Image (cartoon, rainbow, N blue to C red; front, side):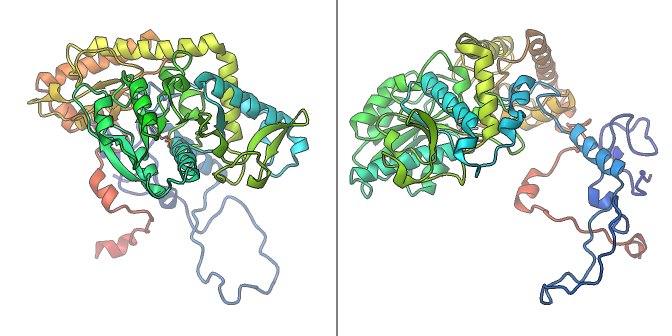
Length: 522
Ligand SMILES: *Cc1c(COP(=O)(O)O)cnc(C)c1O
């Protein structure tokens, strides 16, 4: 069977083929080839005049062959991209239960605000006198972030959580060097359950990473930390709430032990969504923490950004905050752009310009529209929703750290799938057939077959009930031996199971035209 591009249809791969169609499409579910397979190099959607005779100035470097770009008409181009977008799964199409990621609804209000020309059209090289409104917004956002965390200052410019980690750890490094201990304090403690970016960040700037072993209750214990402390330890990187969905119940003791040993407490604040308005990291002894604006304070994310990872700093680290930053001079807001213009001792600069203006606007719009009571309620609802899922599934699914309440995300392991022939991966694939994006799988690594579910505060009870009913139906099917529903899944997705190992080890990054049909037949 050939599809509308005269190519053997791949429709059989996507879902059941009880009633195959000529095109391979299934009503509004349209298959879509690559633009290179579909476009024609001999046509184009625009008519360009032949350039008048000119002498190339490329000294023999000019292209000899046709450029080979796919030509499509305007409607074909539009349909191609719209169809691709319809194959996507996003928070606008359904519940997105990824744990450690806070995929929540982002109100359109925040999008509207970010598109106001006074914010969206500012140029980073505009004279400061013409962008006072933007500076005021940054200053106001900084005030909110510092207040919500009870910290001294904030570096707004980092462009993602991982970039914020780098910023915070560079401030710690600068502080240690200023103490003359740059050569001797070179160890960073990172619990086994940490996000991979934590050890990567520490290693990137030359620290030696020492793991804090995982315990079977999911918490980091102050005794384990103390055993590792010494004059060589620069910092601990601790996530709180942690990636097991638990609030670190010894966090204050850990902070004290770290400080007593002359080290700094870096907190991975990616899970701030669970505690905004409830707990302030500054009160817990944190010296530096990144905030993923794109997780906690609006901004659609996933698929590569853009993100924004401001870093709040304690009084001990504030002098090392990088340029640029907003400050008040002669009663007016202005920017400190260069290290030599700063009153303190910035460690340098993280970005060419000032950071992600659009994310700042969305974040402040989120904060202002929620108010302080609303932000607190969002945290409470996020935790309530996760516990609702936990309680509704705990008779079927197994929890690795006992049947205790969680924060904003609930962690299950795969003990309950033992002897069913179904793995965590199979289970996740079957969720795709049910129209759900899978939860975070196999993370944290310390839990076997981990399934980490974060519903967020923005899901209604009705939508949670359907999600829970779906997971229960799947769980019964797995326990009752309907293995095929899982091991062959997804049956209904545009792509079936991919060879993920091969894709990672042997990625094909370039499209090569297929051999002409006549040749292939020989
Ligand atoms: C998301 C996340 C990060 C990294 O943040 P990015 O913005 O993706 O760079 C770090 N730690 C934890 C726990 C996270 O969830």
